[in-house]
Length: 306
Ligand code: ATP
Ligand code: MN
Ligand code: MN
Image 1 (cartoon, rainbow, N blue to C red):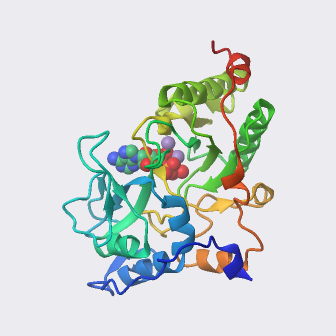
Image 2 (cartoon, rainbow, N blue to C red):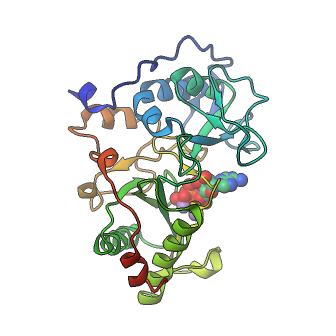
């Protein structure tokens, strides 16, 4: 049953009566999505999204006038009075980072016009050590989708040859995110240096396909593998978060066997993702929590580090 596939242990997975004001307000004219529909989406998928966000500092993107109005990327939400939102010490940034650990905070954030949740690569259990790194494949928008699938496969192969297990998600925008879980050992600097070395290596080996340099002009006809999401305090869109883009696609974890059939990074939206989740036979990121891996000296030296 679908219920058994969803992450459990979410005692607090009901909307808990957060009242949505202006429920009929359209936040995305392209899809006609209302604020209430977005709140309902997050409540429906709350076991999934909360399992990702648990104890993880987040930044939010708010769209008080809908997605065609001004968007506010906020790392700190202490002025928003979102019910049940947790705040960490002002340990890193001088202001308290937000943590969404229950459906009340999740739906409460939507009530405050939040659309996107962006997550750190670390949790409050140990903010000094990243628990994953992310390779964010950013294509030249004119590239055929098939090139993105090939790029993802090539990157997965390199990671696999290095000895690292990785997981895939759509970005809900144009690209794919490859997430590599880590045990809490390596420092931010060492993970960033390592992820950069992977990307430089791939760009050197396959310069027609990849670039290690950001900026649209550097990726004409190619894919920039963005490793810049791996610094202390940097964020990536969280799995199961909606996007503040026309159509309201969602960032969706997929199994590796689904990659080939994937039609685009925006294949699922707030409207059709619940149906996918209901029909899954297993969690696409099955096994994520039990991966134990670290970056070894051998991996570093194979990439020309040390
Ligand atoms: P796409 O597949 O279209 O590239 P994406 O989410 O990967 O979608 P990027 O532009 O590649 O988008 O990555 C931007 C990332 O940078 C976001 O995921 C977000 O976490 C982070 N970020 C940092 N600062 C901001 C900001 N001011 N506004 C938006 N995103 C920001
Ligand atoms: Mn991207
Ligand atoms: Mn990027």
